Length: 241
Ligand SMILES: Cc1cc2nc3c(=O)[nH]c(=O)nc-3n(C[C@H](O)[C@H](O)[C@H](O)COP(=O)(O)O)c2cc1C
Image (spheres, rainbow, N blue to C red):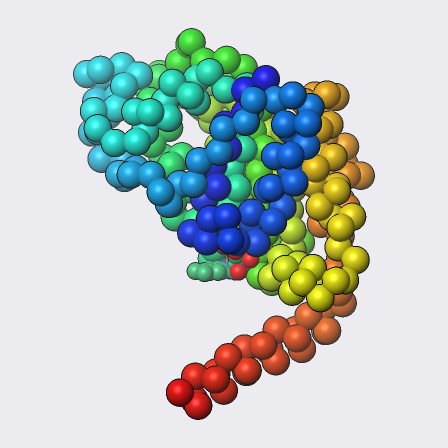
């Protein structure tokens, strides 16, 4: 099993997204998957130019000579794509959106009717692919992931790939400080690891495991209070400078 992973957080390995992604990848590796991780911030990926040369002039190939040329064959060969992103303004980061817009060469211009809906026809040659989303957000509630989930599912339907599920970490900003003061949060990392292992060994992640990744870390009112205290402290430090 080949797994292609995109960490689309500008904080890369220092971010809260990486806190969940890391054990998930450990689980994949423990189940003997071949994992390749890319930090999108480190790659040169230009925006799509909407020239449609990848459809009508060089079918399946984008003319732009940037790091997508290195990623295209990997995307075709991978069995699983993992997209990891924090929530930015209710959705994915701009760098992840930029990446998925550049995936247009993997579809053909032709329309067909799939599940009663107008879609593009996938270009042949790619393997059957599963997609996993790993995300975290600053607000407390799990419903903050709703717009991103709708978007990811639509993206998968359009590309003719399977949405295999999501590891979602609401009030993700609390995870690192709680870990650093030794509060019991290991069950979350263990669940993320188990999800990776299950995906390879059982072909799917159990809803119970995914629910554990998202479990409440602290009550809403307490989270708001702690967060506001931290913001206040940072502003005080600034005033003293
Ligand atoms: C530009 C920007 C927009 C954000 N928008 C949201 C948002 O709409 N909802 C939310 O819950 N958190 C939002 N956040 C908070 C991030 O999701 C949160 O800080 C997350 O833990 C960052 O993950 P990272 O450390 O992997 O980058 C936003 C953060 C930034 C920088």
